[in-house]
Image 1 (tube, rainbow, N blue to C red):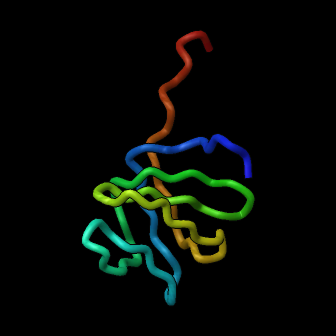
Image 2: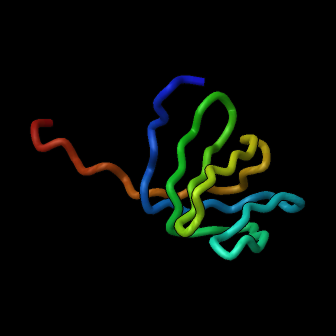
Amino acid sequence: MSGGLNWREGASIELMSGYALLDGARTPRTRLTGVRLAIEGGFVHVAVPGTADVQVVSAPAVARLEYPAPPADPAG
């Protein structure tokens, strides 16, 4: 893994059946919103607000990701 991940803010993640991430209350969830995520090497790194840990799931566990599009480049 590289030292710096390309984080996406304000994202949501939905997992396939049988997979879960822990929310801020440490409750397993199959869908989380308002998270930070980074994709690297077939894995999705997920930082959940209210927690100090980064959770990692393999790409096949992910059903859907959403995050805001970057602003349009005014130059181009």
